[in-house]
Image (cartoon, rainbow, N blue to C red; front, side, top):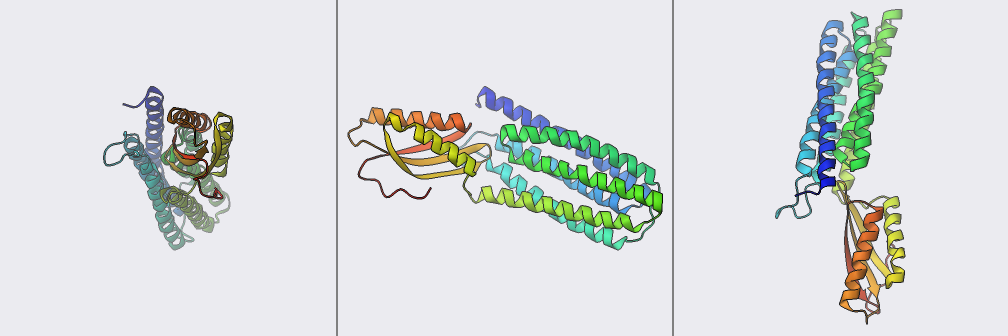
Length: 301
């Protein structure tokens, strides 16, 4: 069974994911109705964008539920990488939607726009709601190191700017009659959405291929190892660390006096694991103990 802090974190993540589903579902419905009423390609682009947000929110919710399952015989390291898989899928969805939006906007260049006021109101309300939800998702993502919520937050944050851009385009059309700006903004929204999707995809892939943790995390690990030297660690080498969901998996070889007892060596490994966990919460640390004189040359890591 998960510990109380982990169970609480899981509940917070799920509530945030449900909030995203509720917002995006409402947004898709409202924007879809306005797109039909106005005939605006920019609003249609926003409807497609919000529909992709809804898919992403559902995927994020399912990924969070699956990733929080405890390890099992088939997945001894847990299921947290499912969050990164969901981030890649969400990014690819955004790129695909962006292509669709760009095609629709280009084909509707110069098409008349009606009932601009309704579109302006809905876009403004959507931008405001998305702003607050995106901030909430971002905060929970950072606190829980959730890749799925991080991706979902990026989706919603993109909706803020694209909705505002669409509202501005509709204002220009209403005030000047320059209908071409509607398609121009639709294409711009598509470019923005594609950029966000590409970034999310690349970020998820980096974790799935076991890219090393950030330089800041490595420095925190080295600080913990350096602090352990007075306890009997002579040196260390082969430091490796990767990320999986909220967990940092750390592997390091430490060199000790060959006359040290097994009990003392075990105590040192416990101290190192605790020191790293103090600096990197949820770290999973494996320490290999080697007697002095048998270790290879320290590597660059």
